[in-house]
Amino acid sequence: MSNKEKTLSIIKPDAVERNLSEKIKSIFSKNNLSILDTKKIHISKDEAAEFYKVHQSKPFYDQLCSYLSSGPIEVIILEGDNAVLKNRELMGATDPKVAKEGTIRKLYGISIDKNSVHGSDSVANAKVEINFFFKH
Ligand code: CDP
Ligand code: MG
Image (cartoon, rainbow, N blue to C red; front, side, top):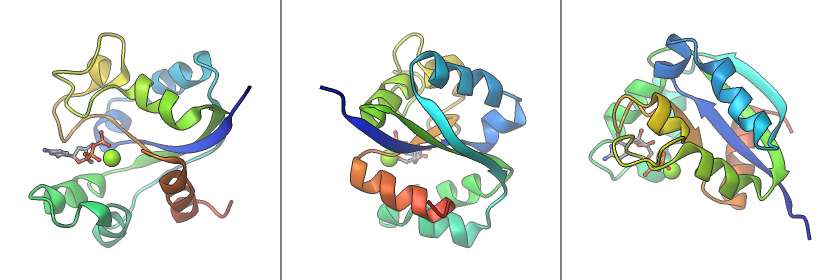
């Protein structure tokens, strides 16, 4: 049985800056995740803090919010069968050093903070994150 889901992907500043957006989007498309909507934006540090508020108690929170607001990002709504998990698999582990071969973070990530992409971690969070950036 199919299980159609939506999820949010963000191409982070390090990857936008290196013109990797098209390459990353082609990985989604090749793996049957369709792009329902996408936009390139530059968010403020306050917006980043709101987006990442689940991490507010973490030692890396302030740096994470500064980073996500440091340059343009591309936010993307992906849709497909088991989209949340599939996107997480295509992204690879948070730390590019330990991400599996062929994953986006292994291919393009620079470091644990500059790891090129964000992906929602559950269907419930995907709804919240999509609503944060899009009126869908
Ligand atoms: O992005 P992912 O869901 O894989 O990881 P997370 O645990 O939800 O952390 C969110 C983001 O915080 C990561 O993608 C990293 O960019 C950053 N982070 C960091 O800078 N240092 C860490 N020790 C862990 C995460
Ligand atoms: Mg996460």
